[in-house]
Length: 66
Image (cartoon, rainbow, N blue to C red; front, side, top):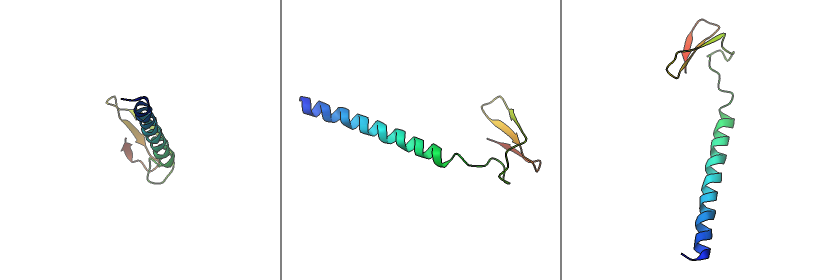
């Protein structure tokens, strides 16, 4: 590979990395206000179930696991 081809490959890697990073940041930014409870209020309690999930107790008594 010539020097210009090597430079194009590196620039391509950097562009892909930047696009993936920007896409992840945009996805996180748009999903930041997703309510856990149906009424949109924050949960009263949270409890770690021990298997990588968290159980949330909502105001209306429902239990939501995420």
